[in-house]
Length: 407
Image (cartoon, rainbow, N blue to C red; front, side, top):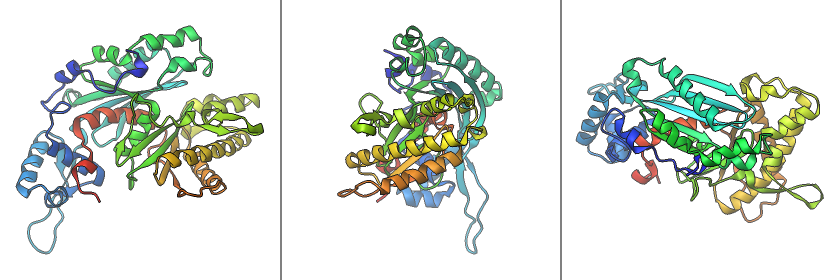
């Protein structure tokens, strides 16, 4: 079993050692339903939760009392009306659980420590020329130790898992990232999830990095969430994800919605893939061709200070490619929303969205509806947050569409 083709299930022996009796698949559906509802809608009083879920007031009261005692819920400020007892909204407790999210990128690796409500409590970052298994595992070991040290013993006992977001089939991209083939080929013979599971006393999950970024919108995204949407994430290579009816769709191999591989037209009747025009690797090459510094691409995106003319040209090319990729995708997947996010500053993301919408209007959409293209809401940390969202979703959430009448 290779690291990039392993499934996203946790190591079960590790899961059994985690504090508490509610491991994956064992937590009662109604408990998970209430936790998912509060995460999706925010604080709610018990009476409103009973109305929305269809559970009896007594059942809701018993469940929420248990979740409160377990430390997963806490009481908000009482809302006083003119008649009757004050209403007390219940909300997720930030200290209810903690999660690690590891992003393995082609130019950098990041580890986040996230609490139960999605707040980032700590992070480590390391830039590299290309990732190797030994380097990534060593980084994960030292970073988990460093960030776990920020928690009290009581808090550390509530660590619920580590998620890993990694590009699948890394060994196929050795030439593209300028890495020695023999070193990158090591990924083909290593099971990073298994190795990390044996290292830590909590479950470890693994998912494609672009899929994880899409999942971050579901778990940690802000604002109204479309029921179905395509998600483009700009990293070293542009990648994609797909949500259908409120659920992350990963497909047979876990690599569904590999939007970066979509063919798009090029000059002279040739064809390219979207990754060839819309990836940050392309911007890196354009900057290098102009003799401009490109190292800042892999640091904090909020601190980009790049050649404006080169960035403008990249945005024009990337948005044109995105428009073709979106047009092809929505012909197959009938969704009305497309989200764009990535390891890019907010203003760059906004310009990409604007130019992509304009490019879409120039295409022939006879027979299908033009989708709405919007910025994502998670930002550069999407892959690492999506990784942290894997243990959270597996252990504490449930598909609301399957449990509620949302129509």
